Image (cartoon, rainbow over all chains, first blue to last red; front, side, top):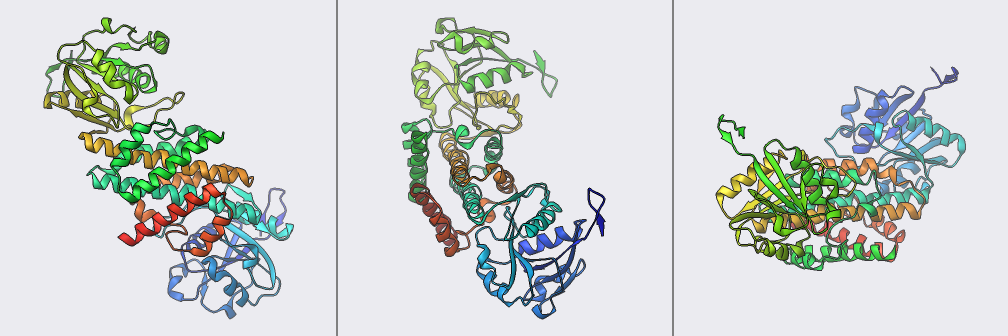
Length: 263
Length: 263
């Protein structure tokens, strides 16, 4: 038991995490040290996926041995959510998934449903500090939303309540700013490699570009030959690219130019 | 006169900057405070473009009044370089331009040629610290390259000697990692706006994505539905986008998937 800000005793939030991948691992480690949370158990289909968590909590690979908890967090691939949640045999349990794109209805257990979506891309070997990771929450009932808000607040300073449509749209927006901009880095890397240029020359520019849009809108920050309709430079660039790179270069150039016209 | 690292007196490098835009302004301010450089003069066609520099150096709008210098730095738009350099009436002067995409031959004066290309996108109101901006240099003669190396070293810790082909390729790579990734931010911003989601939720992800490629290659850092061939999520994303966004989404998804196959 803990005291809340009104000096009233509040119960620790007991959670069970289900999953053996990156998100499940990172969440388990973070919740294990959160003050207002008690990580009761971690479940995965194969024990070897979660063996390393044995030192911080109870682990199991049997759904029949799942312990009592206030929140069950399913952190697995989208496709597998319906099946696992259906197999959960818990009366009136509150179960959430951690997916940006799966709907509430992907949860098919008999009970209350919610979403606990950390907006970050997790890499295996990179340790994650949740403090600055936005957590997007959703629940069917307001009491559950309050519970999720407390749970999220135990890890992060940035908690947002989003409905399913917003969360799915945010997930698409994240694909653009993360996956697609990373692919732009990959294409830049390819060009550097082809012409024997150290990619590190571009690091300050990459950082500055990312930094800039936290102070002005990306539209205001847009520069370059496409933005200023510098057809001569565009033509010279095209000459240096492979056929595949040319297609991307031309389409994004056109998109920048047409985006300019619409406003 | 100054002492170099061998305690030998070395001459201050006298420079004249020609141009009234962002790059000329930022360079003028930086060189004015550099220890081994004497900013002799700034030239622009219109006095009002450089009036604010009057407190730090001599200014002029007459080519006939250009002073003696060791290096003349032409910092103007690519298209205007040939004409201005042709008008420069200086015997055997060393003239450099600051363009990433213009060739050495864009300089049409009678004399020695070089390039002094700062790889950064300059915004009007944002102050720039050159210390971490990579400077790419090129010259026809080795003595001039040594001079440019000293000049660049007075501003930045990152100085790279690149030939014209490399510099032009680097400029294209910069378009991908800067202009094009910024456009991905713009499209993400559009989606957030359409669904009433605060764009700031994406800031940590944007920063993390940029940060990651300074420690692992962008290819290794690639995540997302395209990378893992998650056709169900891709289809759901497409449904949420405008026709124009769909075209970009599909092309970059295909590019990520095919890039994976090639390796």
